Image (cartoon, rainbow over all chains, first blue to last red; front, side):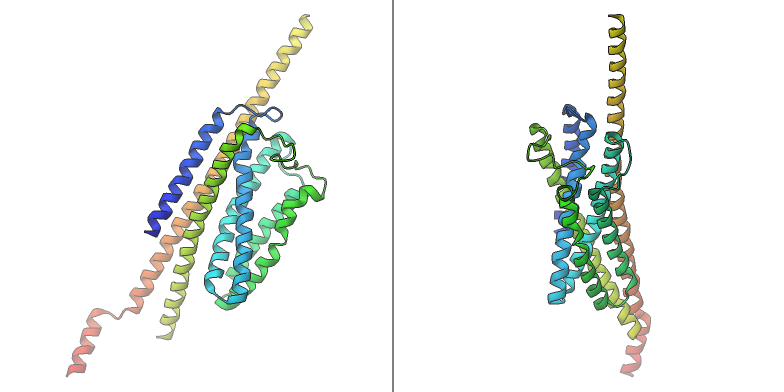
Length: 224
Length: 78
């Protein structure tokens, strides 16, 4: 039942993404930047999804430290890995966008650098987990690391407000240049990314359950 | 007048080139985003298969062989 539901949600998410690509081709180019501006339909939803994943990982890590419930630890690792994939997508699409508009693939400004640091921190979190064998110690160290890594998330979000950056200000509010007729497509793409994130996290969470089962079976095998 | 026409023709050519470049980079971006998602899904599927295989092999290792268990049962009844 759970598998069927996940498959259904995944199919809906992919269907929405395909539909939005078709809709994107029918939209006129943006006035200032032209067609490349449409990359925003993937760039921004990927960033929002990734940072939401970081928030969930933060909550799960705090929960683990309080309750010592390994389900919270499993959720933290699942959501961190999925968020890392979305953040990678955000960085790469942003780099391609920057190449057209700024003429360079990368600029060491506050937004881009803090986002890269965020990616490296969460990649470090996954590497830390691999380095520690004992499950309770691994989960505790990883939870503390995840809480510290989360400090970078508000820096990523507010960097464009706090410092002068090459990265533009938000285009969605305060007189931003995002065309009003693009909002529905953007909203659908945002929903699709979130659904995809839920499906991938659920699948990853199940893999963590498998891993715990394997650990238990290995302990039994050693005891024999 | 002729110079003006030439200039505008150049402008049009430049603008067409800019639009082409824009579309090319937009398609690169979309391809990369999709590839990344598809690759991650494939990675997940491969990992799940590996984990299931590992569980099966561990369970098979922990289960006593059928012949041995029946033999031990027979010896106990004697």
